[in-house]
Amino acid sequence: MNANPKPESVLRTKEDYFKRLKGMKRNLYHDGHKIDRDDEIQQAALSVMATTFDAATNPEMADLCTATSHLTGKTINRFCHIHQSTDDLHRKQNMTRSLCRKVGGCIQRCMGVDALNAINAVSYEADKLNNGKTEYHKNFLKWLENFQNNDLVGCCAQTDVKGERLKRPAQQTDPDSYVHVVEKRSDGIVVRGCKVHISEASIADEILVVPTRALMPDEKDYAVAFAVPADYDGVKQVVSVHNYRSRSKFYRGINPGYTDSYVIFDDVFVPWERVFLCGENDHGGLCALLFALFHRHSYSGCKPAIGDVILGLAALAAEHNGIQKTSHARAALAEIIKVSELGYAAGFTASAMGKPEVYIPKLGMVPYGPGSYIPNSIYANVGRCLTGEAVFHEQEILCEIAGGVPATFPYEGDLTDPELKPLLEKYLMRNPKIPIEDQIKFWMYFGDMTCSGFASILNYGNYHGGGSPIMEQIAITSQYDIEDRKNLIRDLAGMEKK
Ligand SMILES: Cc1cc2nc3c(=O)[nH]c(=O)nc-3n(C[C@H](O)[C@H](O)[C@H](O)COP(=O)(O)OP(=O)(O)OC[C@H]3O[C@@H](n4cnc5c(N)ncnc54)[C@H](O)[C@@H]3O)c2cc1C
Image 1: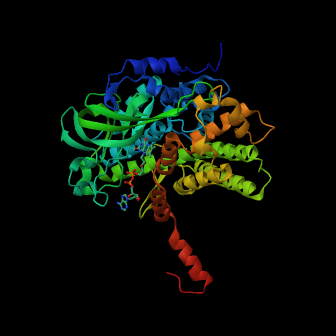
Image 2: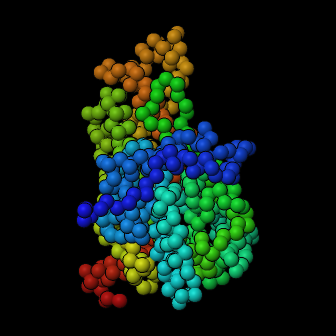
Image 3: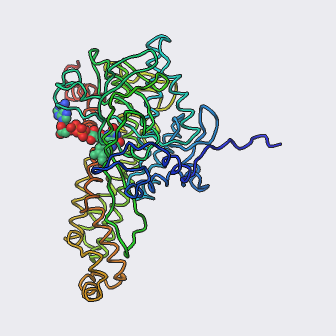
């Protein structure tokens, strides 16, 4: 008999995932129509998500992309896992970088795992505060077990429409500017509002909802976290879809796509079993902060991967233009490498210094949650901030190295037109050592990633996703011990210490 039997695996295949989506109710609205989950327009996004299923069942990637559930001991997809150690945090970061490289952009599934980990800790602490009067954590764990056992895809709906920017939720002219509880019943709650820019909600199984900001005692109705199926009654998704321009000859190696939804909660009833926080304003704020923290840590995996793509584009553009030996091309490559690897290093340190602790204003770092691991906040935030601020600068570097070629590149129809083909191939030739078909494919892909509708959306996502740099600046400066540094100067300058 085998003393250590292999744990039961509950990994789905991509086919299982597609099949489940196909059976979902029609609540996706796109450009004046209702669409099915498997509509042609969503196929590219589905193929990206499918990568997360393929990777988990690939023996070569299993170490990174699967984990052992702390609830059941079963082998689960790492995107469904609650981090139990610093090693788990390292693996999540490395899995994210590795999968983002595979698809040449966002891997889409990290919002879900980041929300799971935030809610896991917050629901536990809120129950502690309520002295057993609430069962948020028990509800969450039961929901999580089903989520893990079925290898479901979660997205995270955090960003509210926010209405008048300088007013708090309770001060808004329209109280629905932030998702809130409009009715409490014996069997559940009714919520109303709209979350915006919610990535991959249109191809997710479940939507995890968390608050978007710190909340005051008069904003308890806004301190709500819950999960509903993505096709749930009363939930409407207005979907924007980001796909590459289609091609019929010069095929790409991969054809990724993305979707973002306005998720409207039109008086949605949520049974208590799916409610993980309701009315604890302090923990509502912490939930917002924790999701952002986990997500900024994920960014230390995805942004370096996007940096790898940008570096490859810059290096090949220099080669195609024959300028690879120039000093400005070398400086450009060094700049991209510095940003990517500093971002990765910050995430690595955030993983290594991870603990079951959070930063609470005036208290500093305090134990938080049931023992699951939380990345170090300063390092996750400095990494996200540094790399987020670099997004448009990196595009500037690519633009500088490329020259104008990607902006006015001929269309496929002209490149294949018998009359124009020989002329265009003659005049597109830049480096005789590279076959002309590869030169054409390279500049077309370069255009996809720098001056297309797709690229602009990617840049906005890379800049604002996980919180705009201003949000990290606030986190860093409020959590860093600046007083200590002031005292250092007082000491060094021989001043009186405070
Ligand atoms: C492609 C993409 C994908 C995304 N995916 C997700 C997702 O999956 N889930 C999710 O929850 N979110 C998602 N986001 C949302 C992202 O987190 C937000 O865009 C980001 O937090 C900024 O919020 P905002 O867009 O509302 O901008 P705003 O907060 O409105 O910022 C606009 C300007 O107003 C300023 N401003 C706003 N409020 C104040 C204030 N009180 N005082 C002073 N100045 C202020 C800002 O500094 C900024 O200059 C995504 C965003 C993008 C672009």
